[in-house]
Image (cartoon, rainbow, N blue to C red; front, side, top):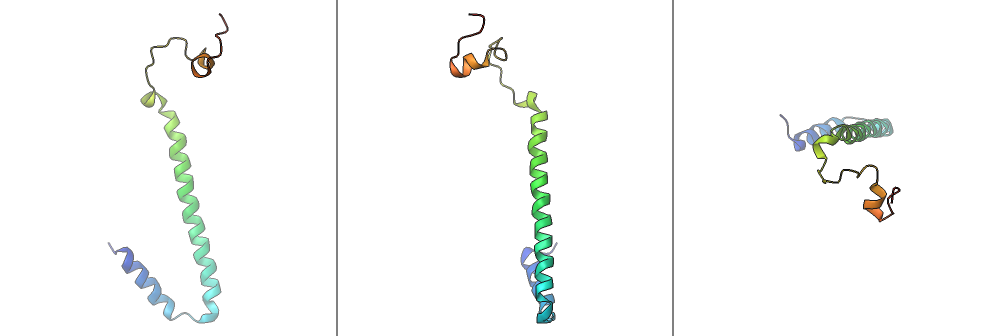
Length: 84
C-alpha cells in the first residue's frame, strides 16, 4: 500500500501540469472533498457514541442501592426522599 508521502508526491506531480487558471476550480474540489471526509468522520463518531448508549448494561455499576432510580436526587444532591 502506498505511504502517505507517496500519495502527496503523486498529487503534487499531477498538479504540475495543471494550468494556473484551473487552480481555483481545483481548490474548490479539494475543499468539497475535505468537507465530505470530515462530515463522514463526524457522523461516524456520533453514531458510535449513540450506539454505546445501547450497551448500557455493559457499563452499568452495581451500587447495592435498591431505590437509586426512584431517589436519585437524594443520593446525588442530598434532597430528602419523598417518602420520608
